[in-house]
Length: 79
Image 1 (cartoon, helix red, strand yellow):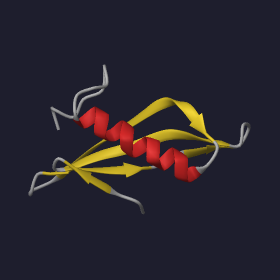
Image 2 (cartoon, helix red, strand yellow):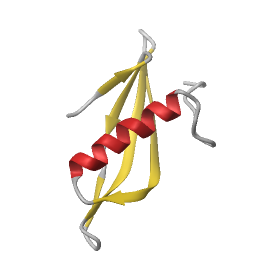
Image 3 (cartoon, one colour):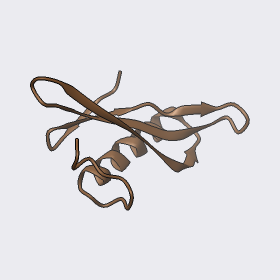
């Protein structure tokens, strides 16, 4: 499993393969370990990519943007 750690959060890319278009979509989970529990939230975005590797790269970038507060309607501040 590919993971990225950023500013105390763990980003887990989980892109979906879309059989009709044979492309990959952006889907990810962001987790934070509070010491007594691990809290996670799932996110997704529009757009598709030709390869799984490209989708994973964009999942990580999207997750970092969410953590930085740069994606309207997506937040981790309440985790």
